[in-house]
Image 1 (cartoon, rainbow, N blue to C red):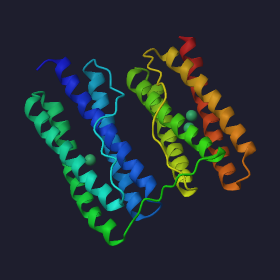
Image 2: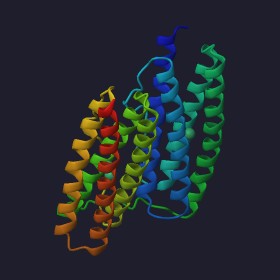
Image 3: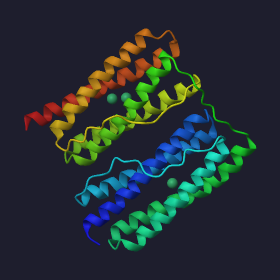
Image 4: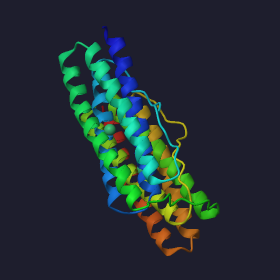
Length: 280
Ligand SMILES: [Fe+2]
Ligand SMILES: [Fe+2]
Ligand SMILES: [Fe+2]
């Protein structure tokens, strides 16, 4: 098997990890706060680590990590049904990883896929247990149909945060500059927090988070990446600031101001990296 074929296989796995992350996060946000949603978020974080390992391996092989989202099953009306869907998604992942371990001969990549497979098998068991737990507790979908100015602000924020998570992760994978790589990953993790806060706020207020992204900047040169990232951060810091000023909801105001302050911090971080890069 040549490098190109391995990259293609790893990108399929990466896309499925991406699908699983979003499916699990949507479930966690939609069932409301509690022990189960925390456990599901922890599983989503495992999948993020898998995505990270796969992306780094793809880049090492000379490829580019895919930004497409793979298999998902978002059907079901009760939390128990959702957990059943997750068992199915893990079954699919287990099957693909077993197949890919067999056909890839590179020992290092085989080892990586085996490590991921062990996690997926453990997740499968967890979700099977959650099917019963959610049924026993009669856990329901907490989402509503709210659609007003506030929910639209949150919708905008969610789409923005999802977009920059993908953008900063992609930039982090593609740059060879170690400091930029670390900072881009750090800020992407911070944007993940924003995505979670905004989604939970929306569900609490009776809305439904839609986790879809807008255009992701796929520059591969650091200067171009930072130009795009700085432009976005400046726009969104201003937008969060404006949204915080108009809302009368004090809880939401505090949340928007906190996110705005993080975005300002991102501007400073990216500006520093840009200065350093221009000096070269
Ligand atoms: Fe999994
Ligand atoms: Fe953000
Ligand atoms: Fe930001």
